[in-house]
Amino acid sequence: MSIEEIAGRRTGLRHGGSGAPALLIHCSLAHSGAWSGVMKGLESCLEMVAVDIPGHGATEFDASRDIQDQAVETAVVLLERFGKPAHLVGHSFGATVALRMAIERPDLVASLSLFEPVYFSLLAEGDPAAYAGEMAAMQDFADCAISEDWEGAANAFLKRWGEGVTLEWMPEKQRDYVLERIPLIVANNHSIIDVREGGVTLADVARISAPCLLMEGERSPATIHRVNDVIEAALPDVRRRVIKGTGHMGPITHAAEIAGEIAEFLGCDQA
Image (tube, rainbow, N blue to C red; front, side):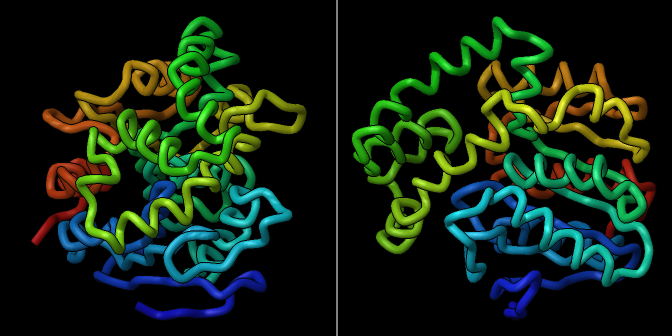
């Protein structure tokens, strides 16, 4: 792992593999090491950089600014370093960053491989009933967050998105890491949940020219399948895959299967 100053922030990076350039962007509450299994599966296909998103791993963040905006700034710098369009691989919040990159800087993006982009604001536009259902499902988390019961908020969040692995099942170091960062989930609402002027729209998604692999876990919350439905319907060049036997944390729990799907999508041979 290396630490560099990128876009004015100390930033953690992991490098691996050889081949076409690729940038990997992880989910909330994780860090770039979450990609270790996927990177191993793609090391003969891609020259990969996995980045710690702002506020995670070794990366600093500015609490006065939108986290997704800061993540996009970092991604621009890293993609420009490659000197040619690169493949973007994103999970959950990281997949929303990748989508924004394909919209705002299509010149830097060769393809998208997305596992469960949590762009719930797009669901509000494409399926308002499903959006309302997701807001209701989030209420336990929201109630805990409002009262700053961060342990309760973490457990509510993990029960839905962590495949049931709540705090009591975690080693102390991991538990402390999650509790320190669970307020960032609330900070992310502005960019991925709130319906707001200037936010990403389905019309923006429809302008994405890069081919996209859109993945999800078989056991993920139903809302995720509906988010992928509306994104799939908007994208002009998309392949969709359901990963059997997994949920939202598929890039960690089923890394080999996901690496295989990405390799097939990109037409590269695995070791």
